[in-house]
Image 1: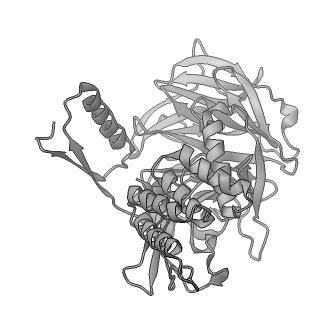
Image 2 (image 1 turned 45 degrees about the vertical axis):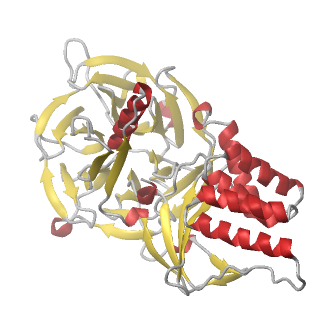
Image 3 (image 1 turned 30 degrees about the vertical axis):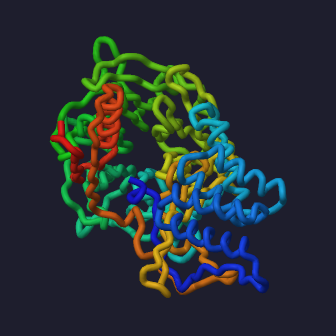
Length: 517
C-alpha cells in the first residue's frame, strides 16, 4: 500500500558509491571497506538483515568508523529494530557527527516512540501558506466557499465569484479550472469528492452537478421548487458512504434533502412537525454513525440540530457562538457556515471569522484556530496530508494550517531503494512521511532537490508516484501454521488489508503448501 500513498521514484543522473582509497596497505581498512560496500548493496536491494551482518563485520575491523555506524543504524531501523537504531544514531549525535538529515530522523523517531498522535487532544495549528485569490490579473479566484480534499493530495476549491471549481495542488498552485462543461456552473457553492466524482451544489441553478475530475458534467439532479425532491438554494453537502447517500442543506426550503449518489430522491426532513419547530437557517451539515448534524440559527440562537438518518429529530445542541460573531459583510444572518470532520467525534465548525474544534461527546469547544487575519470563513477541512485548509469568503483567501511541530521539522524522507541496473542512469525509490508516520501524498517534482557531492542536479525527472497509480493489484501469500492464535492473526491481517483496498481493485490470496480457506 505504500507504493500507492507515499512512495516516489526519481530518475537521476549517475551516482557512484566511492570508497576511501587507501594510500597504505591496511588490511583491516580494506576488509572493512569491502564489507561496507556489500552492506550498502544489500541495503539498497532491501536485504536489510544481510546489511546488518555486513556492517557489523565492517565495524569489527574499524570500530571508529562513524559512517558505518550511520548505515548500521539505517539497516536496524528498516528491519524494525528501533532501539538499536536509536543507539547508533544517538552515539553519532553525541560525537557531533550527525548531520541535519540524521538529526531530523532522530527527532521523528523519538517523537513517535514518546508521544502517540491520539494522546494530543488539543488543536495547535500555525498558518504555513496562504493563497490570495486577488493575486494576478485576472484574479485566481473570488469568494471561495466549499473545499473538498482529494485522496491523492490535491483539493478542490469552489470559487463562487468566478463560478468555477479549482483544483489546487498541495503546494498551493491552481492546476485546473472546472466550469461544468457546456452548461457551465450556476453559482457553485459546495463541493464533495466521492468515488472518483465531484458533487457540486449549484445555488443559482437549484441543482446538484456531478462532474468528472476534468470538469466534464456527467449528470445533474434536482430542480427549482418546494415539493419533495426539488431545491431552493442548495448550499452545503455531506456524503454517507455506508449508504451511498448525499445530504444537502436546502436554504430556501429550510430543510435537508437526501438523494442517492446516482441522483434519485430519497427523503426530505427538517420542516416543522409536532415535536420539532423546524429548521430556520440550515447551513453546514455532517453525517456519521447513523446521525445527521445540521448547523442552524433559530429563535434561541445558534445550534447543532441532530437527526437520525430517517429524518427524525433527536436533539438540539446550543453552540457557544453569538450572532455578534457574524462579520458586517455576512449574508442572510448566518453565523455558522461549514461543518466537517477533523477526526471521528470532533467537528471543525466555521463561525464568522472563527474556526472551532468541537467535541461531540463533551458537547463543548475544545480548541480554536487562532488567526486574526480572517474575515468570514466559508469552510474548513482536513486534507490528505493532515493540514487544515480554511477558505475566507470576504478576503478571497485559502489558508493552509500545519499541526504544531511539523511546520519547520518532522518530515521523514527515506530512501527505500537505489536502482542502478541501467547505470549511469540511477533510480531512487523515496518515501516521505510526517512525524506521525503517515505518508505525504500529492508531491511533485518541485518538492525535491537532488544533489551529488553537495552540487544540485537539475537533470532529473519524476518517473512515477503513488498518486499517479490508477490501478493496483495486490497478492497475499499465507503460510499455514498449526498454532490457532497465529491462524487468527493471519485472518485478522487479511481482513484489515481488504478494508484498506479502494473499490474496483483486486486482491489475490495464495496459501503456501495448502488450499486457501
